[in-house]
Image (cartoon, helix red, strand yellow):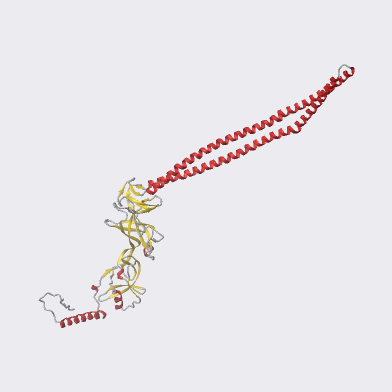
Length: 516
């Protein structure tokens, strides 16, 4: 078709402008040419075989792979955590990426609160230590006092027992014997005085003695009778009253001594129990304060975090995390991981697979990992697939479900660092001998798929049955033979070729697309 060039308004000065009528005629000619070309195409006089872009049907190994992007992480990490209670502030922090040796200072935390707690606990420790010493001395004093009290009451009891025995076995028999002896002596004295009186009266009758001597003897008899009565009364009083009173008193003294000793023992036990309980309570309180001092001492020590081993410093700044970044001045809480010291000799790839990908991934599947600035890919295998989706991004995309997956590297090149971005290709299926064509060569109409084989002046649709699909190709199970050339379809070309061949298109689903 003849091409007509229309000069622009910005043509150089000196070039003569075409008349307006010429420009209009040229536009009409251009439109007519386009209409003629479209009519020719619709009438079946399509392009020749050489105008199609074709690819051959390949025969050979067919691999289905899932391509993902992820980050490198160390298999073994030493987590450096905050062991200070509550929250504290980072005052000094070693730069990320620094290589440290064991014992190097990594993080310095604010120690003011821990030191204040330690000082308060130390004061309490001094006070309770003095209280425990005093309580211990009081216990010893109470034991000594108890022993003295028991000894005194035991002696009193023993004296009461001796006194009662002495009375029963010594004093009472002697007193009774003396009383009986006095009674017998009084009886004998009275008998003697009566005999003397009789003799005196006999002598008086004979005139040997005077009447006065008789009256004297009568007086002596009366006195002897009174002595007998007195002796008898003393014996009766001794037996019936004095003995019972003395025996009862001594028995009562013994009983009181026994009761006092028992009471003293109970009082001693009660007092000692109170003193011992007070000592035990203060000792337990001392143990609590000592543990508190030890804990606060450890807290002060924990404000300086040293490297437990050699390694590369990596801050624990996780993505999709509302925690403040790890930096000087940031607040950190107890048990929070501040740093990691990864062992870079063994690395793994960590990525998140979406719902379509995780259903095709299995443990121990092989993978090829491409690392930036490393010409040779690294091989690996699927070592972990989380059964639970990661919910860290749910707040901004509730319908998104991603599953953490680990790929273990078979070997780790030198110089790798955690956090480096990589691309991994996971082999999920493989057929050793299969026919395949590019996905762009397949057109789907209804439930049927077609591939187009170019002929001299047209394209012949070939119904095909397909199998597995990877990112670029699709497996052909039936409908084509190896080394056959098929057309690589452009947008909308499959429907047009199917209509030209007179095949019912059914429900037009367009060319088969790369699966998500």
